[in-house]
Length: 202
Length: 384
Image (cartoon, rainbow over the protein chains, first blue to last red):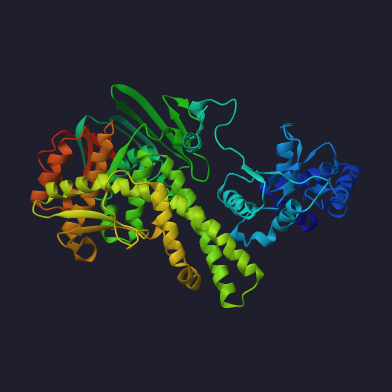
């Protein structure tokens, strides 16, 4: 145990995801030895992230203004909506540079163990968005891109159930299977087993 | 397959030990507490990356040492492979095949296969249904690794659904509101997932039991002529809640349908009690001798023979699929009468390799002639 503020800092850093006690200690001592200007800059950024960043009124992604950059972009296809769990998933899909539609961030997945039900997710907003008009176009396709784990799959099933009442709406789910550029022999048996059972005719 | 060479360092009671096994029977004899079981446990560890005696790895490392090493040379259809595992509690174990490191320790699974029978297996007959379900699921996963994933998925969905039942049940007892409807709406989603994974797991288990059942009866008959042992899978999905006769491979889809129908039927009851009442996690592998259930009615010798018959049936099943697993009989003979001993010896004598431990030399039937090892005062000596 260190004294006073140093230990407080280690404790606070240790609460962050992906940072254990050793890393927390390392960061704390790095900050202790850093230039005061660097620490001040970090402090300002931390403050701004809580005060300056809001969530987009339409899609729920992190945003500096009332609507985010993607929802404001008129070149993007408003008829196509990709539903993801977290803002970081938006970034993941964006990195593909393949997708030209809009997003909808749920803010998590159905997880009764942590007390997350449909009311805690932005599902009502999604339904409203499909029913109404945003950016002058009607939504014609929803791509469900929740994580391929138990909670993500349950969320996907729930969404499919809620969305099937909309006439003329296409609902799709991301495919799951083998990673690109990998060798078949290195795929673990679960992924390969799922890829086998989900195979498609060509 | 058989284990030709075993070397352990700082494993359990052994600072170091080295043995060369032959094909056929290999008998380790020594007084209690000399470390016979520890040696066969090391063989079992290479096959399962886990011990049959403890769930954690810490007790496997010799007191005072930081890590243990188990190394074995396995001969499978003329091909010779050397497996190494370095066990370091609290850290990831490291494994090597022919001195070359593998990415993950579990990549060595399947190179050495064992069927392990030890005193702990009495709980297969006397213990809770969970013990028998685990026996089925482990055998299922060793035949088709996909089922390890199905089982893990099922458990996860089950935990989520149970949590939801508890909160939804609580809401229902309070007042009905909007969030109550939403909770019930998601319950159907969890029902679907539970039924889907449950149907797959159930189909796997039903097919397994259909194959296993005649083998168990035959193995028990061989050990104890006159006794008729039967195994029957009782599931919670049937329209009558009863077992199904195994005709052809089970269809996961129709089983999922049956589970779903059953879930709808007991929905109110589940909400009242806040427990998941339908699914493979409530099923039971029923063991009977004659007309009576083995659990509660069978004598000690009968229970022991039944547990042994289950393991031998698993052994036959794995053998029929290709390479023959190594049979390990840990402290088995002392619990059996003379007649059963010699019958077990006849069965075990047919195995490509069988590793036997016994405290008293006389307990081991004369039919099991082969390599003899005397374990005493921290040494293993070959003694023919």
